[in-house]
Length: 345
Image (cartoon, rainbow, N blue to C red; front, side):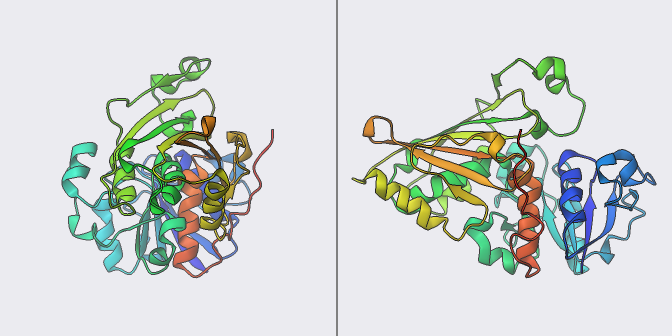
C-alpha cells in the first residue's frame, strides 16, 4: 500500500483528494493536516466522507509526515517549497498542487507570486505533472509540479498543432471560463453566492499568473517564440472549465488531417476524449470526472482553427491530475481510482 499524506486537507482540492484517495485500492491515508481543524475528525467537517475516511486532522507540527511515501500539498503558494527539501531528503515524494515548482526561473516566480523562492535548487528537478506530455519523466520523478487548471486546457489543446509545426506560435489566443470553486474554499466577496450568481465577468486581462506557466511549457515544443493572449472569466457555476482556443494555420492541411492529428496524438491518453470534428463539448460532460474533452472547428474553412476544451477544474484541473501522477510514480495503472463517470444532471 502507498502511504499517503495530504498537507492542507480542508480546501476544495484537499477534499477532492480525500474523495479520490479514500477509494483508491492501493492507498492508505496516513496523515491529513490542518492547523485550524487540529483533532477534528475529517468526516465531521466533510460528512460526504463518513465511513470512507476515519482519520482526524492534525496540526502540521504534530503530524509525522515522514511516515508517508508521498505527500500532496493542497496548500496556498509558498508552503510546499518551504517543506519540500527536508521531505525529499527523508525519502518522501512530493506532489505540489500549487505553483511553487511550475516555473523554472525563480525570478519569474517571484515576479508573479510576490515572494522569493525558498529552494531554487530544486526547480531543475521538478517535473511538470501533465501525464499526456511528460508521462515517462513523471514515472521516475520524486517532485511533481501539478499544472494549473487553465494551463491544462491550453497545453493539451495547442500542443498537437504546435508540435506538428502547423500554426503560428506567435498569435495564440485563449478565451477561458471557470466556475467559482477555482478561487478556493475561502471567504471572499467576489465568490459569495449573491455576487457570483447571475453574473459573468473577465479578470486578469492585463496579465494572469497562469500565462507564463503555459508559455514556458508550450515553448518546449516550438522553434518559434510563443506569444499567448489569455483572458480568464468567472462564470456562475460551482465546478467546470471551458477554454476556447484560437490558432492561425501556417500549412495547407485538411480538416480530416487536423482531426487525425489529434486522434493519433491522444489515442493512448485514457483521460482525453477527442470528439468528432465540429462537436461542442459541454462542461457538465466532465463534471466529477478526470476526463478532458475537446473538439476542433475551422470557421469558414479559413486559416483559423478553433479548439474547444472542457474539464472539471477540480479533477483533471487539480486533484484528479495529481492522483494520475501518483499512479505513474508508483507503478499503478494510470487510471486507478479515477474511472468516475461524469455526473449528470
